[in-house]
Image 1 (tube, one colour):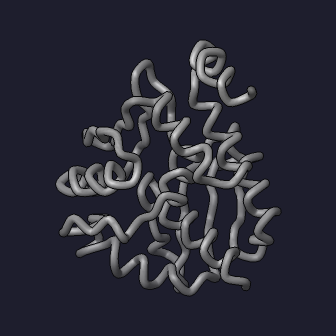
Image 2 (cartoon, helix red, strand yellow):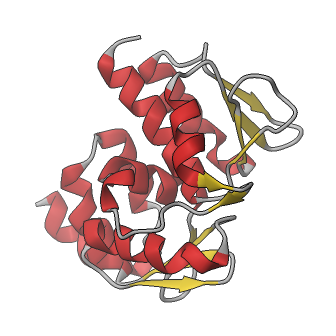
Image 3 (cartoon, one colour):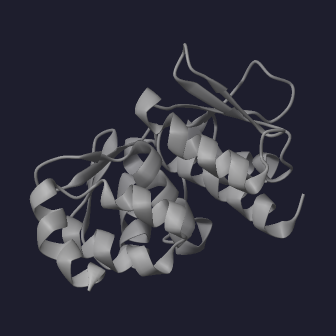
Length: 193
């Protein structure tokens, strides 16, 4: 596996862990399983195809579930993100456990647009959502509000527009879907000129 493919797969695993991804306790190998809505399958399939990751990712459409396997960093991620069976992310404000690409993947795969925020569900132990929110805030430069079972990203137009030039076209195109029709009309005029 080439370095970009390896990094993309690791970032996918991290994005799943930020959200509701969990390691399969019934599997002998490190296998990460996460829920994914049907409407996000084509985006994930594009990532898989572009990075030749079909040997490491399985999509189960009936269960709306994705599995990442056969990737050496999964074992290390499991050690870093879990303590006594609880997903904790980090006990310290260590923003290096995530990166901008993993956050963008998380927004695109799991984010849900609300009126004023993008909500990302998480299965992280609630005691650690503050730390996760701070670390996401470090990369995005906007307030991130921790809540029970989710985090909320604020200042959506600013967040989306500031991320577009920083990530690949595939991810930028998906990010634009987080804007309302009115926001797209208002902000994308300047981009198209």
